[in-house]
Image 1: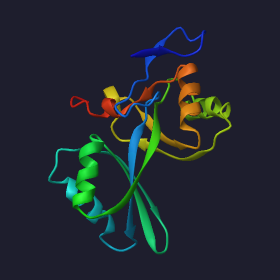
Image 2: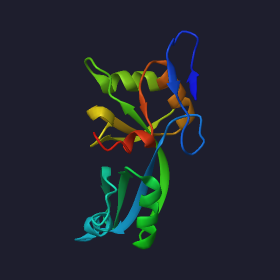
Image 3: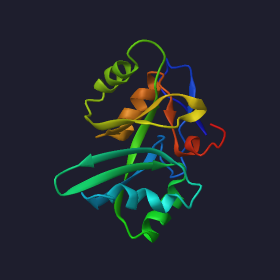
Length: 168
């Protein structure tokens, strides 16, 4: 289902998602592990027996523990894999934005998000973007407002379905 945002946008964008939201988002798994040798291996090893690709990973270390943030091509299967591995994790939604062409693409995104007055809590690149395009994952305070603003300003948002394409 295509929705047009803003009278001046002129472009229609598909904002229907598999989880019934009005904006495209990508599920991130936040895995909590002890900060010790082999902790990262414990998290990624269960996926080696799977064709479910790790699309991106970010590690935040503290003295005692680490949070390993994962985006996978098939989040439903990833959820089951993490459960079966008995790993402690939570889920959160990210906005994944295709980097625009031109100079300073991150600055363009940040300027657009300034309109929402919503903080970017953290950001990191995705290894595999749709059609080989460079993308950035953003965890923001107000995902709905941020998504609406980015679409209205002409940015391309990536959904979970976009990450499932096998011929990237």
